[in-house]
Amino acid sequence: MTRIEYPPFDFRIKKEQEKEWIFDEIRKQWVRLTPEEWVRQNMLQYLLQVKKYPASLIAIEKEISLGELRKRFDILIYRDAKPWMIIECKEMNASINLKTLEQILRYHITLPAKYLVITNGSYCFGFEKREGQFFEVDEMPVFE
Image 1 (tube, rainbow, N blue to C red):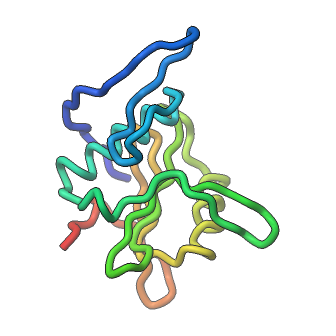
Image 2 (image 1 turned 45 degrees about the vertical axis):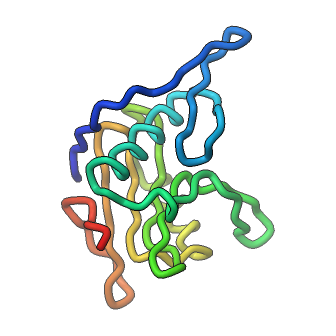
């Protein structure tokens, strides 16, 4: 488990019809500011500012098919035109449990990424796939 310190960022937030919205710098659009979205936006800034991941290789909330089911992943980072890391965001202080792990493993069936990350805004659990098995990592990998 890794604790992440989010960098400061001047988020653009507005209120319309009693609801708050935040501007997503990657998607270039306003999205509803939910507790999970707050975690997602802070994680994105961590990836961009601290880890220096290229914004052009990050996809957010895209739909995927899992058999007949339609699901949406939170964050996907590509490398060499292939899925490299899947990040599942949960709202602040939500428990990260077996159900969350099963969710990201289902996404991995369609998106066979080398890294899987689960975060609740306070903590991250990261896993690297090597030789067909997942091993826990203690920090976010460097994007080279």
